[in-house]
Length: 330
Figure 1 (cartoon, helix red, strand yellow):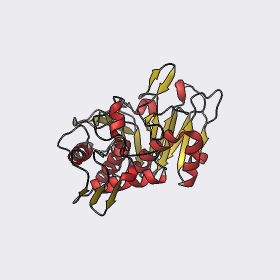
Figure 2 (tube, one colour):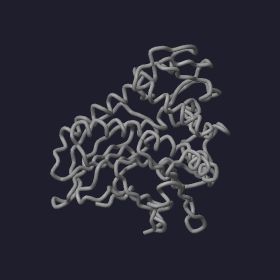
Figure 3 (cartoon, one colour):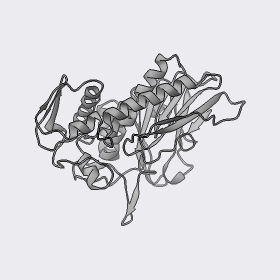
């Protein structure tokens, strides 16, 4: 089975996390197919699991729902009782006993913020809220340099500083679910949450899992396909999260240099990585940085990235890393 992103995933809003998490078992392919697909809802979007046709899904679905509920209780900004929301209501100062896995994801977000020169910034929540895309309120004039995590102690420098981990939350959830499924004995599967995908093991035919990345405007030109074997892919773009204002398309991402919505210079950016968390964060950072600065960041951090231009008739896609060898034209 070759999986096209449009057919395999329904991006949905996917802007933030929701407390509505359900597991729905629903075979999606013909009886003679070598795979079956099962899906459910999470984080304001959908998840989907593709298994070998002869594998029982019930245990897998239980692990998926339990894991997603745990993550939702930890980092959802929409839940007043989540660990993240409790932190965001706290005053500036030193906050101790930040437990794992929250401390791990905060540390990762701060590391990507530093490596991306602030293109990715986990303190951007209040600005996201200002433009109507999220629930986090706080000090808009903070950035990632105003917070430090030392072991399990969080040190904030400004009153009203908040954290928004939605920029890597879906990727993080993909990693956690993948780990849970493998520990439960599942060795070959494709799993997706709202566009962040991991391929573990192989397709039942023995080849790698394949995912196609659509170009802008449903063009049939320069469709790229990538093979995923114990690898993740994440995409940030405008197709399902964008809106038009004065003939300009905007998304929900914030450019910290202007403290405003990104004026996109490309249609989408995809990143492949062994870590879905890092693929998710870096696709966000590179999209905000744009194709010129983003390509520099991709090379500097040895990333496999694909920058899809808005107009394929006038511009060419930019590839780095493994995309140079995997990207194909169909």
